[in-house]
Amino acid sequence: MSAPLRLPRAGDATAAAYKEWLHLNVFGHGDGSVGLINTSLHGDPRDPRAVALGTALFHHPATGWHWQVEVQPAGAVSLGWASVSMQTIALAAGLPGGGVAASVDASASGIQARLVGSEVVRQLGVPGPMSFGSGWIGWSVAPRLRLSGRLELAGQAVDLRRASGYHDRNWGRWHWGDDAGWEWGAFLAPEPAPAVVFTRATDRGHRRGVRTLGVHGAIRKMFRGGCVTVSSEGSFDEPLVRIPGAMASLHSGRSRPALPRRVLITAEEGHHHLRIDFTVRAAAQIIAGDPVVRGYGFLHELVGGFSCEGTVAGEDLAFGGLGVYEHVD
View 1 (cartoon, rainbow, N blue to C red):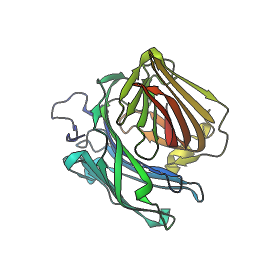
View 2: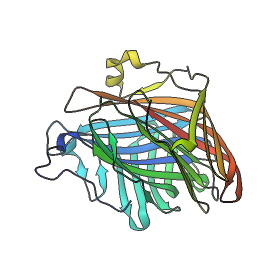
View 3: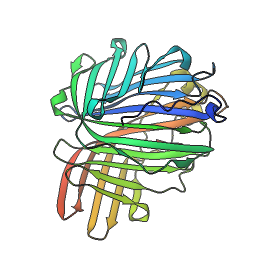
View 4: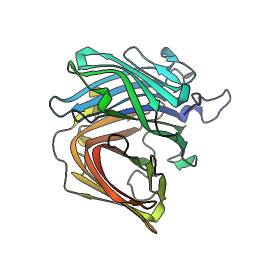
């Protein structure tokens, strides 16, 4: 995504609703770790009410969840051409070749990272912007990155030679608390398997919205609309990690959301068909508060393993790996 931050211009009447996210996922195929690093801006950085949020959230099968959250006034953080840098978390997009760089300095939280992601699958923009709540949202994605650098969880190194990366950006105008939500999933196996990405912008009750499922690799295919279906089985009723802690305390009634144990995504279009079977291993809830209006968004991060099978462009596919499924309301 070689584009600058889409900061509001002077005189923009919608600037108070500005949002922008830079996002990196890591899938450690060697040890089963799955995590994210993101930086985001909420409100016009020239407005003293606006905030910047940095989040690093990783799950390791042996040691559980590790997280670092940093909240600062948006005017107090370093904004580059396509980067947001905070004291403990930073992410920069738009590196040569479409790459990204991320860092986390949070040894007390069990996370140390200096990562560079090089684009393997060509980046793409999703047609839009799309209507979203009281405003709109735009999105672009690099479905697979090859990672280098270092990542340590609880003092143990993640083998980046056996890891996959994913990067996306979204931006737009909305307020947390609007009648808006989204569903998103990234499912990556080791190369040369394709990356599979699911997305749907929807209302807060998840009753409407167009689903898309993309296959990105040597084989490329986009399924869209009614040919994509999603169903769930079971209930994930284990305790959630809820962050930031102060926000979680304010919303104790959201401590046990209805989350699935298993998610099934199918797509059929002519001779093309694909099926993703994702099993949830752990879940976390990130609470985002709007700095301008009284409203909140609840981002649920479900991590686990998946299997994929089908036929796309005449090629039979059968592979499995690690995934993350995000449910936002």
